[in-house]
Every structure is written in structure tokens, then in C-alpha cells.
Length: 261
Image 1 (tube, rainbow, N blue to C red):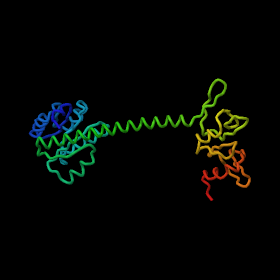
Image 2 (cartoon, rainbow, N blue to C red; image 1 turned 60 degrees about the vertical axis):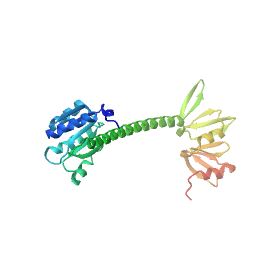
Image 3 (cartoon, one colour; image 1 turned 90 degrees about the horizontal axis):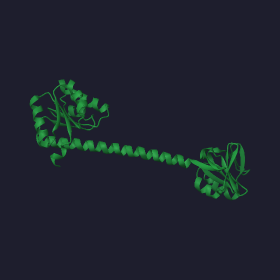
Image 4 (cartoon, helix red, strand yellow; image 1 turned 180 degrees about the vertical axis):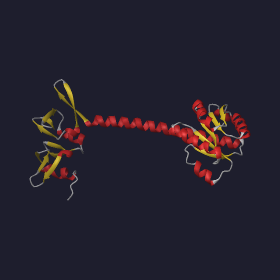
């Protein structure tokens, strides 16, 4: 990867050692990063962050004295949900330091014995973390859009439209107790009302299964409204109404229900 490709990066450096600070500025310049803000004072670091809005923060993280301010700043930035990657600088890469610093997401740890190669590798890693974060956000956004679209489709699928005069009335499938055929028309029973349609029961059965099941040549019933099934009588009770179970439909109808024997 060419170092000039990182000219767009903005970097904030928090380090109290003047010599190390100057070395970092030189190395970053050689890597091709010129948008650099440096500070020695932890109390000024957050103000500098708010002003620069950096892509990467290089922070002193020696776990003694002022070095604790580096991880503290990282935690504060992450609570703001900002998209920033962190490079922690430690004098000695010890187990204790690693265990404490690895809890900060989008971060890496390097020692203060710096070289251009070591710093470039850390920058490469930080940029990769930023790119992965962007992809994750885009993926999450796409999934959210897909979820909304699926909900809209589901809502559309849940609605049936019945013609009444010159207009159509929307009725949710869950409100329909059953459909029945009479005089070449099909009717939907909703509450105490009947809504007619020219759609045949066979078509409705195929479209609305498994929410609605065929129990008779004249009926398809909404399973959620079934109160009881009277096998000997050949009847199904649907919201206080008894409907017949046709002999030729009986086996298939019962097989589609969760009968606990």
C-alpha cells in the first residue's frame, strides 16, 4: 500500500514525551499524513478531539501517572459513538497492559520504540478497523431497511380488500373467522357481518393456508378462531358458531391441526 494513500487521514497524538512527540510527527509526515494535531496535556486532548474529529488517535497508554489518560480518552470518545481507531503507545508491552487495553474496541498496542515500518503497520491496521466499522454500519443500515421492507410486505399480505359499492374496504385476515360459499359467491364472516367476494373458496384455501383450513366444501376456517372440534358430530366450533366438517375433508383438516392425543 502506498503511503500517499493516507493523506486524507486526520490524526490526534497525545504524548507527554517531547522527543517521542517530535518523532511521531516526522514519521507520520513520511507516511504521508499531514493533518496531525499533537498535545502533551490530557486535559486538552478531548477539546482537540472535538475540534479535529480525527480518524485515528495515537495515545500514550503507560498505565502509570498520566498514561492512564489515553485509555480514558478512548473510552470517552467511544461513548460518543464516534468512528475512530486508537493506537496505544506503551513503554513495555506487558501482559497487564495488553489485558487492560484490549477491551477498547478498534484499537491496537505498540511500544514506544518506534520505526516508520512499525507505525505504518499500526496505521494500516487502524484503517482496516475503520473500513470494517463502516461496512458493519452499512450492513446494519441495509438490514434495517430490509426489515422495514419486509414488515411493509407482511402488512400488505395481512390485508384483504373487499369491494363495497364503488370502493374497497381493507380487512385484516386475523379478523376473519371463516369464509363460506353461498349462491356462487364467497362470504367472509367478520364479527356479525358478511363481506362478499367473487373469489372462489379453492383459491382462498390455496392462498391463505395454513392460517385458514378447508373443513367442508362450503367452509374454510381461521384456525385462531377454532374453539373446539366435535369429532363424533362432525362439527367445528368457530367463535360460537358450529360448522360442518365434510367427510372428504375430515382427514386432511384434522392432520393440519396440532391435536394432542
